[in-house]
Image (cartoon, rainbow, N blue to C red; front, side, top):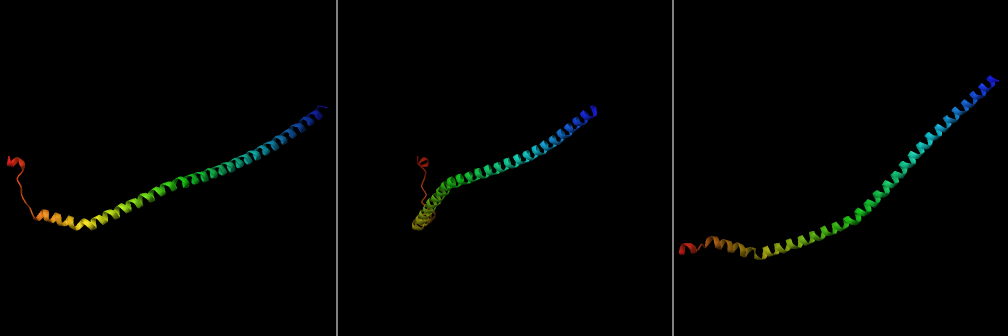
Length: 114
């Protein structure tokens, strides 16, 4: 009877080892699947946030572009205004400078006169 009990115990131990092996394999597979699923969710979330960021950036950077375009137009208008004034009065300014250099009229300082 002892041999029979011993054989029964050994059979139970073998069955338990086999069950542990199956459970371990199943656990390993589930862990791999969970990691793959988590990575997939992370990638989807990252992609979603990147799209939101690009949309936000596009909405807010367009305002800067408009302001830059307006500033460039204003600067171009001022530049043309200055160039027009230079063309209109440039000759007179040059003549006045030449006359001031050529027609020197020395005058004594007020301190010297006193």
